[in-house]
Length: 166
Length: 415
Image (cartoon, rainbow over the protein chains, first blue to last red):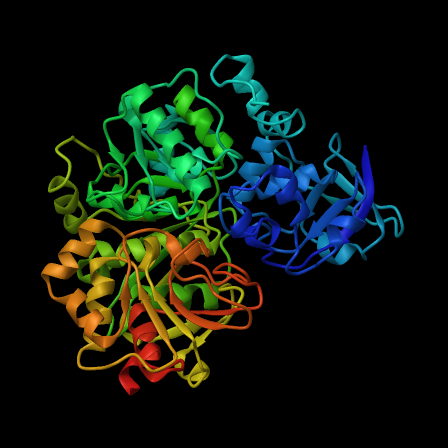
């Protein structure tokens, strides 16, 4: 069971809002500080470890940039959206950030309420209202990457890439 | 059970007899394309073992020639990788320079019926060549480079059947804007294009549409093969290939017919394209400071020809910057030979070397606070091309060229 305070975002939240173009080659720390700086300035200072994002349709539309890594680096517990762009989802798997789809999630929560996620039962519960919704199951192999640090540790362990420099 | 084009390609690449929505396909990757940003310090990890150097293409495209010292160092890291692993297909700054998706198409590096991976979202562009091509993240691409494999969640497919012919001044960019405005996003779905109109759609026109598949959030965007495609590939790559056609009993989530002759020029309003497009006349009159034609979607020879057609005998309005960035140096040279570049220059356009450039707000055309731009490129997100307060409208090359002449958003048939 994973629980956290929720922050709500709408439909079509794009990668450029999470990781602005001028920071594509910047450090992970600078990238983390810039999340949603255009549409929600100051938000990164309000987020607490374990908080969750609730999104609308088509969350993460846009580019291949590692936007999911910035969300992970903010200490967020995960994301639940009505639907998630396939490339953003891949990056969530690859960088080890929990990203789940759930029909009806956007209307089931008000900002600041608490969500309880059960992967064992593929459900999410609104602790404040008691409402329970079904989460679309993620294939076991992808879930295991998502919850154990992503792809890099696997490739390092197999001697295919070098450990991170510095 | 019948399969769609993408299901057939993924079935073959994963060694399965059939595959369908909900399956997780682990596939052999036929081609990995690395771009300059792949070697960015925040993305790159040193590769110790490469699966197969002959299945790798490296194309520097986002920031070429290097605009700053960080990029220069990134390019050096990429050149070192190319040397170390003996990559023969390498497009550095020079006559073979271009945007990766354009270079991949004009050399037919990706063959019909195969699987291609690249860490840029517009990789779906190669769907015009009947490929299962899509953007991966940087770690995904390293996985494919080192193991030869990747995974795909198989989604449902939406089939678009095109009939009729586009009217003069209307392009597949307008067709894309029509689809995005009418049907919205296609997250977790594939799109498949076919129908009798294909005979009248050039490979350039098809690539514009498949490239924009990323903006529909489609998993894959793929064209049905035909004689135009097969001739195009054979003229560029001697390798044998097996195009994939949909089964007659393929199962689609939806099947939608579009009569191309009924389409008119469209424009996307700022910040998003999904359900945010209108006929050009509804946005006409909006003053602009910059007009851009370029990117993997709209830097084709067809696009430059169309811009030149609109600009012949006309001048860019005072106070407007018209920037034109060909998709590759090869296109640049062909456009010069055809006289398009001369026409653009005489009209007052600035023609830049081939690069992703202004499309992603990287260099050569970054927008300032509060400016308004109309662009024939890939994205109109807030902040995409520079300052987050800049407003970005998106349209076809004809509409962008006409707007540059008028000084405000304008219909090419009405200036």
